[in-house]
Image 1 (cartoon, rainbow, N blue to C red):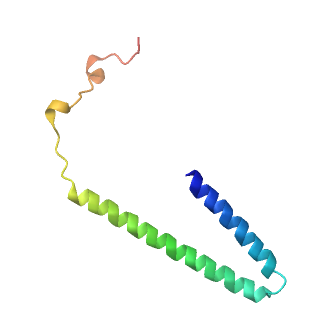
Image 2 (image 1 turned 120 degrees about the horizontal axis):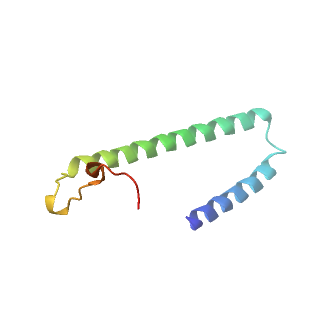
Image 3 (image 1 turned 90 degrees about the horizontal axis):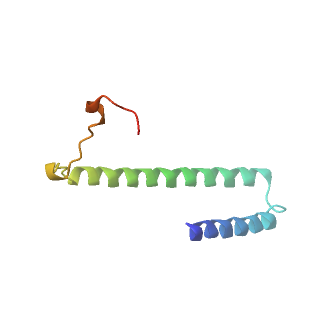
Length: 87
């Protein structure tokens, strides 16, 4: 997690430097195009990740057969005793 944060911070710093270099030369319309492309790319990547994760969970759910092992079951008897108070 720390390495990912560090890389994100490094990318942000690099992009900020690039932004400062390009700011004087790009027009307002150029920035609008860049923003649109960036937003569309991010949305597309997000959708791809959601689809990939959804497919993973569906495969996991479909491949596992859940069987209960009675020797490993725990039965909650609190509701049967009539007393819900802690000692």
